[in-house]
Image (tube, rainbow, N blue to C red; front, side, top):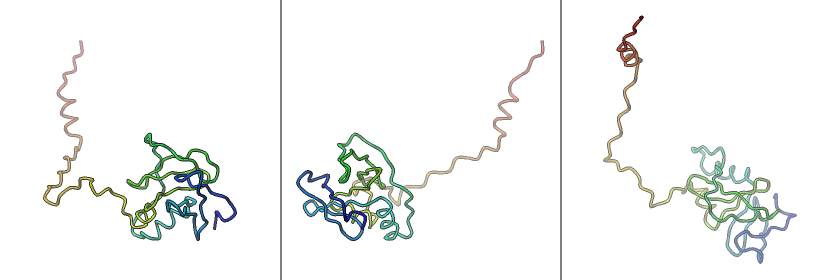
Length: 147
């Protein structure tokens, strides 16, 4: 249990709520958010989704208000698991809001309103393979003059 001997302040309910250490992370009793060290979180997601590949969480701060780390209180960065936005302290771990852990474990990370291709849509044809003859023909079209 990585957070057993540390006081953690909930980044959502702050400063009034502390997190309670659980088996593999810490949870806020008020907002029901979770805090995990990143390797533990990634391992839980991989274990729940053995046929899927997850190497890392991608960092992209999109201008959303950033939260403080529950341990060191420095501003966390925004990271993404597919379309699921999470908060990460590079030193201590990843914060998931209520319901995000369940969504991550179920790999339910694509918004329902995202347009998806219909089965009736034809697949685009692959572009023709250029074997280099077009370039040779184009180059041969030039006349080289030796004056």
